[in-house]
Image 1 (cartoon, rainbow, N blue to C red):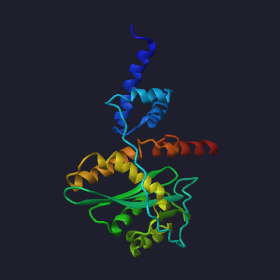
Image 2 (cartoon, one colour):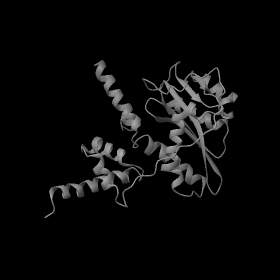
Image 3 (spheres, rainbow, N blue to C red):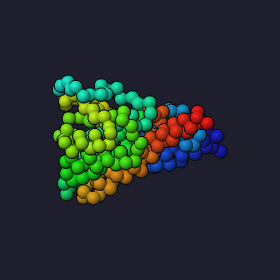
Image 4 (cartoon, rainbow, N blue to C red):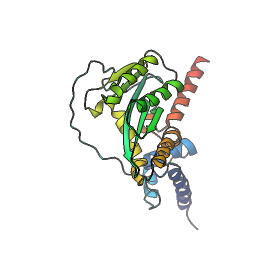
Length: 257
């Protein structure tokens, strides 16, 4: 007869396998442990999770290696963030940036707008061309779907798309405060760099992409159906962006009742 400990471990392996599969094969032990606690009510020792995940069929993706950057650190007068990536409410501070990835047909460009409060992508756009229309489409999506105020900051780098007349006018049209970091300094938009790094590991680098449409659909699916809804963030106590916003909303409503 197998011991109770052995039976529990077999049952845990099934649950952990399910959690891992639902994460699209991306979660390592800390996110698996958090999901067991939050979604299944199971308090499991981190070491036990790690032992079970040594199974060849259950393993997370490797973490991104650190990258050394040459920083220009040219001061600007309109940096309203100064690397203080903290917000106490939704729609107080948005970050935006562009990434690119190749397919056999050509390069695909993606621009995202990230709400630093919940790490939720609140606006995005994908195109074959990296022009001002790309960043404007992402910003317009964010402005249409979120409740902004005159104090909402949109922070970017000094890329030509973000310094363009069209983007600047769009920022003003939506009543937002534009902000830019120092030239050539990745740390002045580090949460966006972290977001792109996650997408790179969890989606882009996992296969070779054939067509622009294939990659575009995969990017949109990653943002809307995985990153915002399902992916657990260590900076949010392992809640997903959607869970975190709903939890804070419930607490706010309860305090006003």
